[in-house]
Image (cartoon, rainbow, N blue to C red; front, side):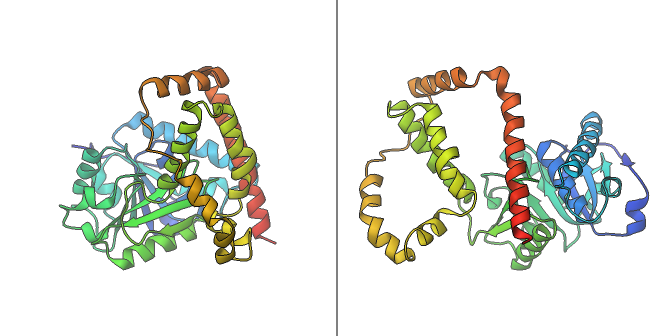
Length: 331
């Protein structure tokens, strides 16, 4: 069973005194901690559930540190102080206690279908009729882990992007049986915590973000493994070229604004796009000699012992971009 014993560790009685709606986060890893921080910033009472007491303890310490860093960088959301937000977060080792009063549950366990089926099957025994049951799944459609549930109409995917505080997108993916009201309420919660939700009209493997991301990865892989360009140069094209543009506008708005509207853009560039697209070829296989060559180039460029430093640099840059966007939106 995924559930464990009955233990609740509370930071403060302030959450009870504020009498706010409760949101439960299932899993205390990186994504779970990110969600908990965001929900608390909007004043929700947050319960983090996990089966590992040591991991929950580490999660609380990490959340407090993240909040302090966000405050120092001017990126802490909401009107509450760090201490007030942190006091809204409690933890539980009992799934029943964690979810029974929740208006919204955000599952953040590993991307394994059998685990999600197990957790959602257990959760639905304890939640109320109005409770939204959301998964952080990045690729698994909600119908695959909810099809046999009694409360499947309350289930959907709310897929975030890491790091959540600096990359605000959330993909909301309903199944064919998800009630429309649950999609709408999820969207409102995401907007309340400062995220940017997009709602898919129907399921599709990989959703939107990963389908776009995999298209870029596929062509990047082909360019490198077929000897057209180096891995470092392909990445430069993104961060010094397309990425600069796409940090501000999506590809469709880029088309619309790079000409006198969409029709004019396609009239100008449509034949060229079709010609180039016809040369893409089949999707690459991420194995064999191609993988060996890609790994060789990447480890020569960025040795494995430098990954931590590169991740920290990534987060600093994302924080800077997020701050600029926040200031632009306030004008």
